[in-house]
Amino acid sequence: MKCPFCEKNETKVVDSRLLKEGFSVRRRRKCEGCARRFTTYETIEIQMPAVAKMDGRRESYRRDKMRSSLDKACQKRPISTDQIERVVENLEKNILEISDKEVTTKEIGNLVMKYLRNLDPVAYVRFASVYRKFQDVDEFVNELKGDETNYNIDK
Image (cartoon, rainbow, N blue to C red):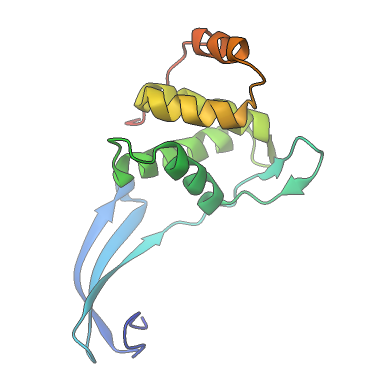
């Protein structure tokens, strides 16, 4: 593994831990050249279904895009990065349950809102206001009164 600081190839693993129900490994590494430490993660890569956009385009699912939208919704909220990561993992499990070939942005957005509603009401409102593109306050209030189905992030 190349050191991110000095770019030497000689690093050694100092500590390894299983994460996420055994589907990921966290490794603490030390560079033999500069002696700095850094962390790497190994995860199983699963082929996610394509994402069908509202305008008819198809895109590959991108975990970083999902994570970024959750980060924005949860910004300055008392939500840990571990909680956000668990939401992303659970969302991906749910997406794979919907289909292994294609899933719509509407299905993904609805899942995200259900998880956020349970996690943090402010993050939920932030995401819903962008995702639903509300035109007026009445639409917004109706959304808040809507579906009460909650998803637990600790599945």
